[in-house]
Length: 71
Image (cartoon, rainbow, N blue to C red; front, side, top):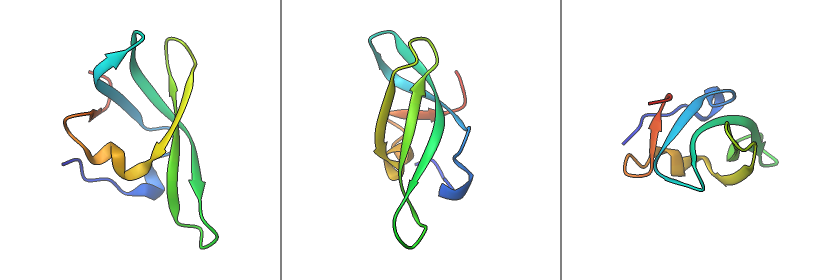
């Protein structure tokens, strides 16, 4: 399991273990926060296609789906 500090996710790089639509490398472009300023979700942008996807930040902890950095 990836150890992650949610406050330091902005501009971090991620690699999808099982790429779809030729989207393998991603960059965190935005952190979504709740009313208490806790990070709840992240917006990932695919480097190749510039498509965005929103997911709970804890989903990045899954080693079977995401790897830190660009592999």
